[in-house]
Length: 250
Image (cartoon, rainbow, N blue to C red; front, side):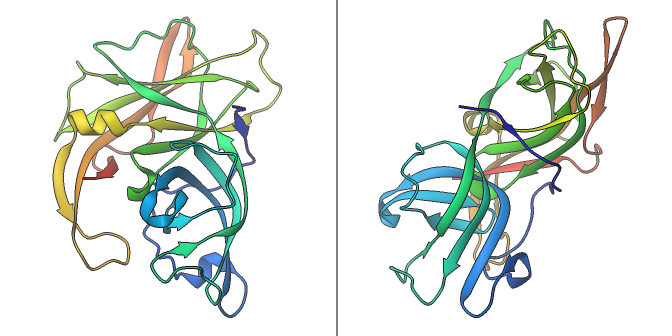
C-alpha cells in the first residue's frame, strides 16, 4: 500500500455531526455530496457487503471492489442520492473517490526506545470516531517523503485519571531531509488494545438519542518534535485535562 501524502486539511479530535448535516455537503435537493474524511472499510452481511465507516455513520459502498475488510482510506468525495436508495434500512454511497491509508498497530513496551525512529514530527492533528472500528487517524508533517511510523504505549509511564500515554515516533526513509515539510496521513489500529486495556461505558453520541455500550480509552498523544544531541523532546498534542478518547462499540 502506498503512503498517502496530503496537503494540509483540518482535523478534529472527534466530531459530532449527523448524516443529515447539509452544511457539510455540497448540492441541492436530496442529492448530497460529502468530502474529505478518513474512513474504515468493513464488511456487513446486513448491508449486503462492503461498508464505508465514516464519521457520518455506516454507508453501503458496493462500488468499492478494490478494498479489503479493515482497510483504512481517505475519502476525497462521496455522494448520497436520497431519492434513489436501494434500501430503506441503510444509506448507500456512490461516486466514491479515495486512497488507501497505511495503518499499523499500537505497540506495548515498558519504555520508549527510539532506535532509528529519530525523525522530528510537526503539525500534528488527530481524529478518533466511534464509527472507525478502533482506528485512530493521525495527520502530521516530517521532512521526509516516505517515513515509517510507530505508536508506542508506555506501560510504565504514570497515568493520571486513567489517561494512557501513547508515543508517536517516525523513522526517515533517507539520510537526507526533504527541503520542505511533507504531510502524511497514517492510521493506527487500537481495536485489540482497547479491548484489552479499555474501560466500559454507556452513552449517547452524535445525533442519536439511544444509548450504546462502548469500550474506550483516554490517551495523551506524545510525539518527537525535536532531537538535540541525541536527546528527544516530546510535545503532547492534547492537554492532560482534555485527553483523546477512542471508542469501540461493544
